[in-house]
Length: 224
Image 1 (cartoon, rainbow, N blue to C red):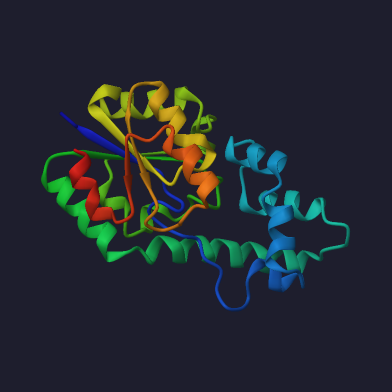
Image 2 (cartoon, rainbow, N blue to C red):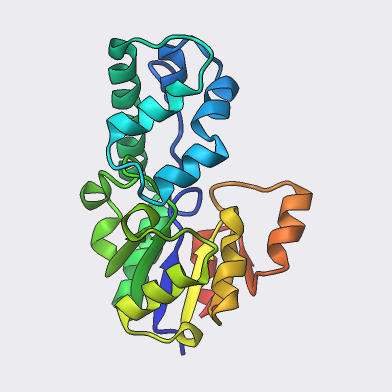
C-alpha cells in the first residue's frame, strides 16, 4: 500500500522557463547557452545546492566571477532580480492537470513530500507557490546539505513523513540520477515526461531505474 508520494520539483512539477526579454542572459548580452554554461557550472552548482552559498547575491557573485569580462554591481542586481522572478513565476504557473492530481491524492489520504536539488534562490518562494499547500513536507538540498542521488536525502524525507520507503513512490523527470537514488532505498519509482521529453538515450538510461513511466500526470493513479 502506498502511503506517501515524493516528487521532484524542476521539470516534474514546474519548468523555470525564461521570459521573452529581461532574462539573466539579456542583461549581460549573452545567449542563453552562454549564460547557462556559467550559471550551471558543475562546481558552482554543487556548492550552492549543498547550501554553502547562503544568499542570492552570493549566488550571482559566484556565477559572474567565472565570466571573462567585468560585470557591474547594477548588472548583478538586475540579474539577481530576473532570476528570482523567473523562479517565482515558475511556482505560480503550474499545470492545472498537476494541481488536480495533487488534490485528488490528498483526498485519498496519501502524504505528499518534495525532494529537490535546489539553491537558496530556487526555493525562496516555495511557501508562496500554488504547490506548497498540497505538500506535508519539502526537503530542499540547500537546507539539509544533501544532494540527490545520495540515499541519505531520500531516507531523511521518508523519516520526516514517518513512512517506510517500501510504502512510498518517488516521481521525477530523472535528472541528477534521482530515480537510481530513490530505488536504492526501496522506493517505487515513476519516470515522468509530462513537462520535458528526453532523447532516446536519456530515456533508456532513466527507464533502467523506473518502475513506471508516465507522460501525463493523471496516469499516476495507475501506479498506486
